[in-house]
Structure formats: C-alpha cells, structure tokens
Length: 476
Ligand code: HEM
Image: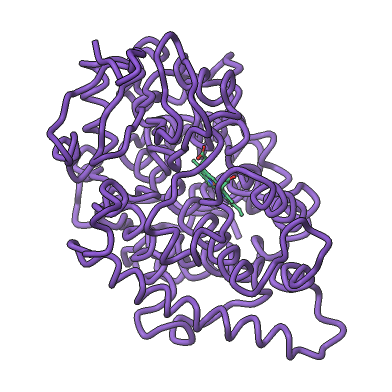
C-alpha cells in the first residue's frame, strides 16, 4: 500500500527508481505496457513517471469516476513540451489548461466547424473529395494494381480538412519539400514521443533526446505556412468568397468580445489543432476498419450485402443512407473498440486534490485513460480479442461517451468536440470503399497473414501501410 507524505493512500502501482520513477516500464507501445501493469496493480494505478505523479485508469467503472463523477477536477491538461514548442506556448485548444480561454475557443470551434449545421454545410466538400478518391481507385482497378489505401485515404482526409479550415486545398510542395502529410505525421509522432523534459522538467533545457530541436524545426515550417495562409485571407478582396474557419478566427483577432484577446499566435495554434485533430484521426479509423474487414472476409461480405440491400448496386452511398446502415454502425463500433485511434486519449491533469474510490489523487497528477485496455476489459466484453461486430446486436452501447466501456472519443468536458464530423467521415468513406469495390490482398497474401502491428502516437495508425487490389463492383 503506497502512502504519500501526508499519509493519504495513493492507488497501488510499481515503486520505480529515484528520479526516473517507472519510465523504464514504458516501451514502444505504452498502451500495451500499461495494460499489462494494470492487470497486476488494478484499474486505478499510480506510477511516478520521472518526477510526475501519474494515474492510469483501465476499467469502465474507473473511467466513469474520472470522466463523469469527478470530471471537473480532471478537465485540465498538463503543460507538455510539445504544446510549448509546437503549439505556441500552449495557446492552442487541445492542450489548453481548463479555464475561460479553453471554454471560449471550444465554443467557437464547435460553432464554426463541428456543429450539425456546419457538418451539413461542408457536405459538398466530403462528397467531391471522396468522388476523386473513388475515381482514382477505379483507374487502379482497371490496371489491376494494388492501392496504398493508408496513403490514399489520409491524403483525401487532408484535402477535406484543408478545404474546411482554409477554404482550399494546398499542394504538398506549397507547404514543405517533405509534404503536408509527412510533416503533420512527424509532428504527431514528436508530440507522442515520451519526452524526458515532460517528466523531469529540471532537465528539459538540456534536450537530451534532441526532441526540442526537431519540434522547433517543424514549428517553423508550420509557422511559415500559417503566415502565408493568414496573409492570403487578409489580402483577399473577393467579396463573393464564402467564409472559412480562418476568416472566422481572424474576425476575433484583437477583439475585446472574448475575455481573452485573441492574437495571431492563438489563431495559428488553433488552426494547427484543427488540422491535427481532423486529418489523421478519421483516416486512421478507416485504415483499421478496412484492415479488420480484409482479415475477416465473411464480415466484409456481410457489410457489402447490407449495402446492396439498402443502397443497391446501381448507385453509390449517399450520406443520407448512413442512418439506415446498421451493420456498418456495428463494424465501426467494433473497430473503435479494438483500435481506438487515440489509445490513451489525450493526457488529463487534476486541478485540485481529490479522493477517488478511497484513493488520494494529488493536485496536478497526470491522468491517462487507457481506452485501449478498457475496450479489452473481460468484465465488459465477451471474448474481447475477437473482432465480432454482432456483439452490438440489440445493444444500446454507443460511441458518445455515455457508455464507459467504449470511449474512443473520450467523455465529459474534454471529450472530442468533432465526434459527429469524424464519425460521418469514417462511415461514409468506409461504406463507399466497400460498396464500390471488392478487395484482394496483394501477392496472394492470406487474410490471416495481414500484419496488424501498430505505431504508437497521439494517433496510433498501422505500422505498415495497408495495400490491396480493387475490383469495381457497381453496375455503372
Ligand atoms: C474519428 C475521428 C476522431 C476521433 C477518434 C477523435 C478522438 C478524440 C479523442 C480521443 C480526444 C481526447 C479526449 C480526451 O482527452 O478526453 C479528442 C479531442 C479533441 N478532438 Fe477529436 N477525434 C476525432 C475527430 C475530430 C475532428 C473531426 C475534430 C474537429 C475539428 C476533432 C477535434 C478535437 C479537439 C479540438 C479535441 C480537444 C478537446 C479539448 O481538449 O477540449 N476531433 N478527439
């Protein structure tokens, strides 16, 4: 039983070494390491990572205590090095500390980007970009060539995001010689790499891992790009151009309307947030769903049958069909259960001391919700390792954060504000790819041979890109 200096009972957990604590217990896939540790120490576990008290939550019941019962106490974010160097000293929204700035920005973003009204308004962008992807895959089908689905879906997702946020697409070269997608991915990877400076702040300045240097380099690329976009928006005199997210954010610049004066740096930080939050998340979910379907051809067939019955082989899937596709909904839920896009959500931080389940949780503890482990909790799920969408037949469990055994979008105050938009993109893209094409793995690979290794990051995609050969299957 661990005690803190005031004799209050901390949750159980490994003892750890002086200074480094239990950092050595985390490897390449921390969600799996933490899952193993939770099996030994319990669903509310205390670790010291470096000098930082960290609480790891690994069951639906425990998640409910942190994200619902005591939601307000755990609604802040820790000050991470990545937010400092990449997100303009934490001026962004995703990593903002709990308080009125975060509240204001959250309100603006929901109103301008993720409300039902805006989701409907942006529908034409999703339809056009998805059509381009389907046309490109049709060409590959004619040539009997393999398609890099990971690359194609994520580049389409980047184009959708750019059009919603900036009002237009940018060519990769306009951004940086490495391309948009690569730099965003490097940024996400940098943000997710355990940074000694986050755990032992006293040595952050030494940059022992060279991460600060790399973060400053990507931040410079983004800054140049955002400056260009902001200038383009300010200079544009076309009165007929419809307003995009950047225009809206610019209209708040310098305004006294909000409690905080929103400056150029805030806007750049928030734009980056929106790009990072939208681009990779939906594409990664589609990539995992397709991987599971290719691994389970009978489930793929069943989904195609549903699409045939509801949509028919004479037409493509419309967004208005999505509500009628029950099996698609189950496939998406099952994918999120086994492959939550952000397996540890984003880190939360406690605003004050709190007692949870009899355990003392000190102020400024970092709280990690291991939704990857929760999706595999044998107390909540039968045969948890099995990909089995039918488990959702006659079940009310949904993805909205009310059912704590399935939390791919988090829950409570810090839950994902883009869930509806993300789900619409994931379902529509997945349904269209499965409806328009039959798929075969390349080089005679058998479904069971498909590699499912993950690459951990804030967003955790497949380690190896997903390749498959399409055959067009619609009548026209
Ligand atoms: C499939 C798609 C998506 C998934 C799986 C996803 C998942 C998540 C998760 C797990 C969190 C962290 C929740 C927490 O820390 O408790 C989050 C936060 C967030 N998401 Fe999403 N997301 C998706 C799409 C989007 C989209 C399309 C947007 C739109 C702009 C968005 C914007 C955000 C923002 C701004 C936050 C930070 C919220 C805050 O700190 O208050 N997400 N998302």
